Length: 284
Ligand code: 13P
Image 1: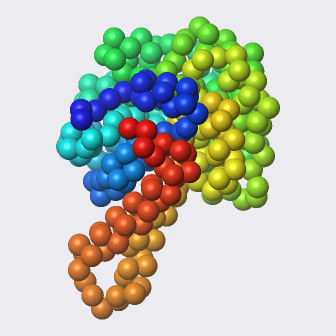
Image 2: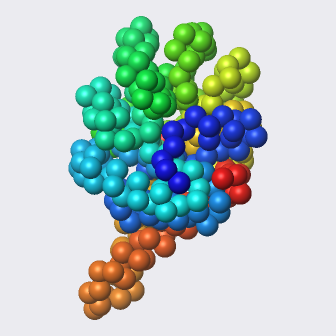
């Protein structure tokens, strides 16, 4: 299938109360693991790239990998730019063929966040590109975005409603107490806030900071409107552990393709595990 934007897949997921996995890829091998895992489970899937990954590889290489894999696949695949503060990079990704982008102006004062988010929606919508916006501050590190614990704050409900009603983004990411990276303790999720928002808007929500959440938390957030579920850190660990574990077990063997294959399997297992939890198996 050709690459899709997130609109149809997220609206359907929100309606039927399952989550579409949005997985941050690192290279061709991880992209392949995400798409083929989704294909195995007949699940729609979102390939996410951090701004840092886009800068590292360049848009041309990434769009080529993703397009080729999506076109050979029978499941809907979207290519989404995760947390991006840089409008020029967002424009580059739109020009290169990304089907979805996220403007993260959540560190700015509310009015500025609104106006930057509006600017991106105006850039993207004529090209049929979906847009995710964020409000509140999600703690942790997501590549080059760092939010310290003392600076994190939950989304403000009045501002959330104003943002959704005035901008009508395709996906809304409210800070509800989840965090990027590994959790130090048990996360305190503001389910009441999530319920309050989702009962008043008809826009699919994104759940950030997926790595380390329990199955119960995933299921509750999805039931409360989180149609997009982000996983990044778990794949970074799978990528490195896949390499290290293989090498430790075969320390005299220097066969890179076997190492790559071991990484691939770890990544594929992680994606399969999450798709099953999110309930999107068979929904393609
Ligand atoms: P994790 O790194 O905690 O999985 O979060 C992913 C994410 O929300 C990407 O935006």
